[in-house]
Length: 144
Image (tube, rainbow, N blue to C red; front, side, top):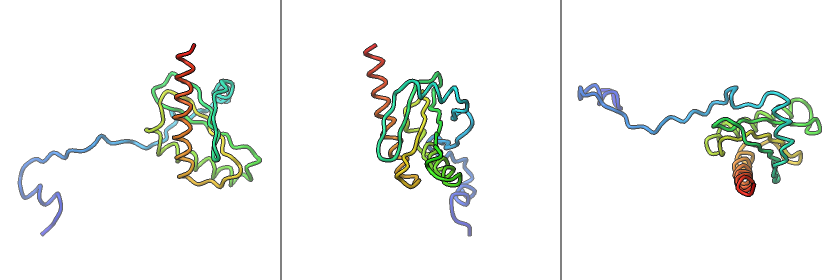
């Protein structure tokens, strides 16, 4: 005899409705990326940033209802293999915490060179720093 939901469903002969939470998609499609150098330059020129031991985060409001990500890893961070590892780790941290980050902002992340690329510290740092910048930007908007 088979066990599990399917066997109970088949045995009862009733249509069962599964109550589930809305599915949260954790994809990182093209629309969530800053692509052009003009996009990066706009964010850097806004001069709204904060940092901690792991990251420097630059922020600028965008016209979208979702956050967009750009990553800048300089050559002083190491060879191409290491720089790509930093970028992959930061993209993954963003992808997993995108739903907890304030929407409507373009973000540029710059990793600090004194830290090895590990996802969980980057994820926590990203959420904390974006919350700080969101409050700072809202305060700036109210004052002007």
